[in-house]
Every structure is written in structure tokens, then in C-alpha cells.
Length: 454
Image 1: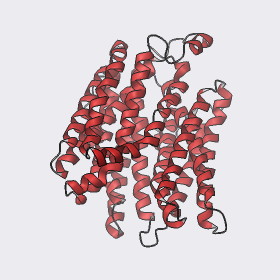
Image 2: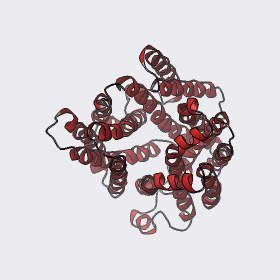
Image 3: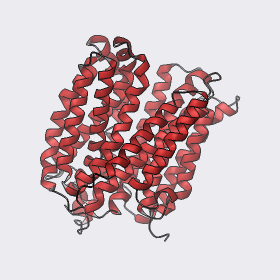
Image 4: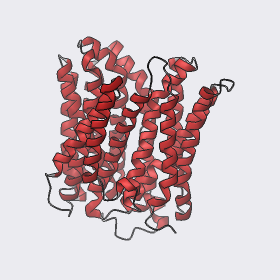
């Protein structure tokens, strides 16, 4: 489907919905596959302590996560070109093959080094799949239904977020840590079989020939992301040096890989790409350190902290559903900065009991609920805007840029968080202040997401 063609009459589209014949299998398969990717990410994070202990691999613990992030950057870049030239079907096949091979390698690993290699392949595959899913299902679904589509994608994370840690713990305890990887490997092909036939009908793209010279910039971006991730694991001068090197590498690669004008928030597509990086980084850095604030400073239990994170996941889904129902263009323009502002204010409320001891700690929960709602309102709207501002032959490259911005700015924010966090005092408020500043900056810059200021 060419998204530049006139869409169906709104009433007809709304009546048919996302699960109308011709797109039902693609949407169901996409939801199932995203849920599996989400469960894998959450379950592996839960199971990794047991994995590292079993394989005597604690020195490689951080690399097991950093390698996945680094290779996903390469996967995103390759997938953008593949989708534009060869179509999302072939890109999906490549992503599935790499992801499944990585799951099997990790699940059967006899050493931590082999497991890290499997995790790197998983990152490569998930990077390709993330772009291919957005482009492929975006072409199957009419443009008017894109807000609902991205709300559906957000909702696919809720159930894994709520049940993933408990299921992963149960699998580790009753079956063994290998089952966390192998169970996902068994289910992913079933979801893929529902989705792939619809993507095959999309056909090849009409973009430029594959430009493999861009691969070297993707490798530089990957190295930058890995160094930024490594900086968050170190202390002192070495952490600062590694952060500076990683930031420089990521900045150089971003200038080549992202649309011209992204780093200065030029109107239209470049601003959309930058805003995605800002709000993703705000959430990633806050989510990583919120449990420390709740448990170490406020005295909450791990279970209570986990429930707070789950509440944020639920309100993210609610916010996504709300934005999907807004059809008036003027209202959507106001809703985007409002979502960023709600997230920024929510982060301020989260920090308030830490700054003022007299305030009750439950305000942090209320603030985090607001953060989830604000990001749910704004995050899917950026994806909708990106497809709207992209010619069909550029949707792959631009979707790749959106997710690259997410990965690179989040890596930089997490690296900076590692520098701001003092393990001796366990003070996380500076990290949350950074996240709040990123969300506030997104609110200020958000009017630039439209090409015209009117």
C-alpha cells in the first residue's frame, strides 16, 4: 500500500478497524511478536543474575546487555535500507533468523562468552525487526489508523511488563535459566508465520540501491553506544574518558546516519527524530534509577518498587489509547507538547519527596503514573508523524533514524547517569533531574515537529 495515496473514507476505515480482512493477520502477528520481544527483554534482565552465576560470568555481566544494544544499532541501519529497497518481508526474515539464532546460542551456551555472542545476535535481529515491523505493518494499515496501530504496539508491552518478571523467575526456578531463551525461541516462529504472508504482499520498495558504505557509520555508532554503556558501569576518570569517547563517536555517526538538521531540531522530520531520542532517554534513565530511589531512600520493598514500575507501564498504554482516538489535527498538535510536559511534571513530582523530607513518599508513585501517561500520549504520535512526513521509498531509512535516535540518546543519557550517580551516597536525584530536563526540552521543541508553525 502506498501511504501517499488517498486513504479510505474515515467512517469506512474506522468501521473496519485494525483487524479487518487483509490486515488482521499482520496486526495479530505484529502484536504477538512485539509481546515476545518485550518478554524476552524483561525476562532476560530478570534471569541474568542466575545466568551469570551458573556460567561463572560476572565479569561479562554488563557486556551481556551492552552487546545487545550495540548490535541493535547496526541492525536498525541495515534494516532501513533493506526495507526501502527490498521490502519489509526480506528484512523481517533476516531479523528473525538472527534473533532466533541468538536465542538458541544463548540458551545452549556453556560459557558466558558464548552467551554474550548470542545476545549480540539477538540485538542485531531485534534491531532489524523493530524497523521492519514499523514499516511493514505501517504499509498494510491505512494511514488514518496509524495512531491506533502504534497504540496497539505500546499495549503489547503491558502484559509482558506485568507478568514477565514473575514468569521468568518461575522458569529459572522450576526449569532452569536456559528455558527463558528457549521458550521464546519456540514461540517467536508461530507469531512470525501469522505476520509474514501479509508483509510479503507489500512487495519490494523503490528506494536507492543498498549503500553499504553507511555500514561503517553504523559500526561507529555501535561502538559509541557500547562505550557510553560502559561508562555507566565505571567510576572516576576512566568513566569520564569513556563517556567522552562514546559521545564523540555517537555524535559523528549521528551526523551521517540521521536526517540533516536532526541535531539542531530543524522543523519537520529532523525534529521528530530528535524528540524521539529525548523522550526515550528521559524514560530510560528515570526507569533505571527509580527503583533505587524507592528502595534506598524511601524504604520501599522491591515488590512495591516493581508495582510502581508496572503502574507506569499501564498508564503508558492508557495514554497511547487516548491519543489514538484523537482525530482533530489541531488537538493532536496541542497533545504532543502536553504529553511531554506531563512527563516532565511527573518526574518533578517523583523527585519532590527526595528534596523535601516532609512530603509523603507515595507522591513518587503518583508522579510516575503521570510520567507513563505523558509518554503514552506523545511517544506513539512521533511514530505517526514520522510515517506521515516520509515518502514511501524513505520510510525504512526514516524509521531506522527514529530508532537510532532512541538508542543513541538513551545510551548517552544512561552514560551520563552513571557519572551523576554516586554509589557511596546512593543519591539518584541528579539522574532524575537529567531525565526531567530532557522531557522539558522535548516539550519546548515539540512545535518544531510540524513543518509549519501554523
